[in-house]
Length: 67
Image (cartoon, rainbow, N blue to C red; front, side, top):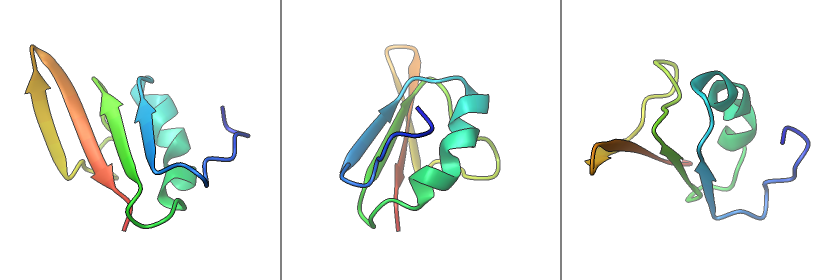
């Protein structure tokens, strides 16, 4: 997971525990501007708040767009 080249991605979907999401943050933040990161159920913590979150049938979805 941590050695995968994510650079071609335009959308990255995560369903990982918060600790793993936070470990991936540096790699995610290096992606091309405009790339979207969507996480099911778990956010990135206070260090990288989601730009949007939404409850979908009782499950939280979090969205970030790389700038």
